[in-house]
Image (cartoon, rainbow, N blue to C red; front, side, top):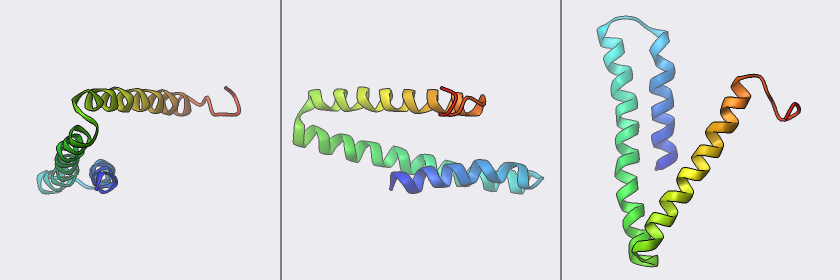
Length: 89
């Protein structure tokens, strides 16, 4: 589900430069908003499952670990976009 939500988010973003006008813009915003809503729907379900299975402290550890992974991923993406590929690092 989370993969689908990010695919929809990405599709909505990539659609933006492909058309013009209010209706097209509204369509793209609707697509990426639906993707964001799916992400927000998944988070409580996963958080609750972690809470039930591993306890309340585990929720915060998983959130922190997720933030760390995302930080590393965005740092790698920034290097890639700036032309510093793996061969140059």
